[in-house]
Image 1 (cartoon, chains in turn green, cyan):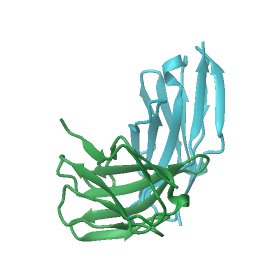
Image 2 (image 1 turned 90 degrees about the vertical axis):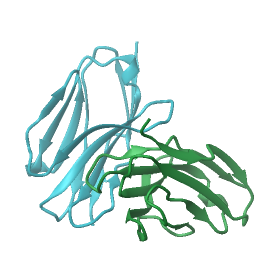
Image 3 (image 1 turned 135 degrees about the horizontal axis):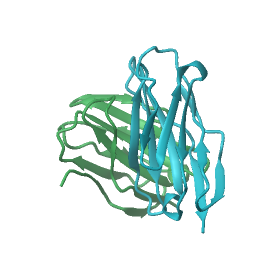
Image 4 (image 1 turned 30 degrees about the vertical axis):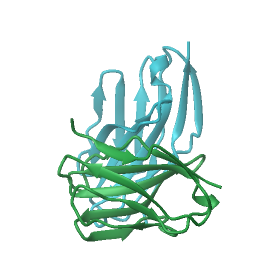
Length: 112
Length: 114
């Protein structure tokens, strides 16, 4: 089944404790992206990747890192999480940048 | 910079009413792509439609229709004879051909009551 898989679905952590949210797609998509969703702010792009080893900042990249060492994986790294990074995170992929996005089921992160 | 505005934060209708969700966009590019996504209460994001900037034909899919007007930079979404299952947050999004970022509007929350 074609899908984007994010893990974990729920995560509660403390300020400053490094964490990684994994994202994997099995559709051989070139484009992958991370978004955060906050009430009243909609979906805001954190980082995106056009292909392996090619990443770029979205609208809200501060406090996040990404890497794209393999085509299928695009992990989101929070080196030192802070409470303002409490949010619902979505990973997405598409065949190319102009194609419709396929979204993962989301990761709800709480930083205390 | 490109921008998507969904001025309607929340809309509430009674079942069987028609409802239009507005989307206004800004871009300097002549080639771009517009999208609509649906987020039901279960939380997943579902693709509804993509429209290219060079294709201004309106589209109808069952009870859903989309009106793309370049002259007013709008890409509005109409649900005819709304149903309770249409209750969701709907997002409009824009990607220009000169960059790779995909920008979403803030979403419109639609509540359809019986």
